[in-house]
Image (cartoon, rainbow, N blue to C red; front, side):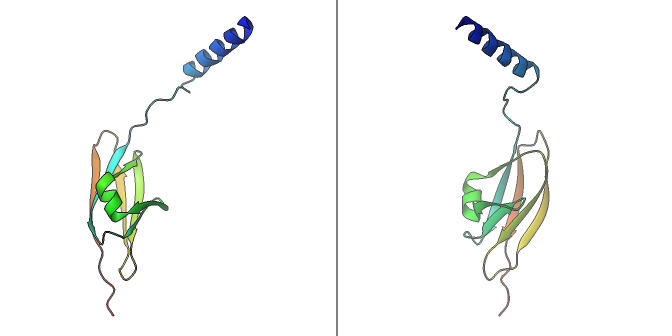
Length: 102
């Protein structure tokens, strides 16, 4: 029984020394405003929710370059490349989709 404890403690110390301990990742908040509220927001080709949900809660982005897309039926799509810089509090985008003419 004691031997297993020694092995477990050694494994924990080894992982900690290798940097495997979990530390909170630094993220930048994507904050958006705009219309229509039910437009679908994707970041890096992953659906994150509706525009009104993103307006209310934001989206945590890791530092780096990200592609933000907003689409809704009957509107031209919105695409923008944003840079989330470490140490910044937020990236802000205003999105007003343009209706497709009849």
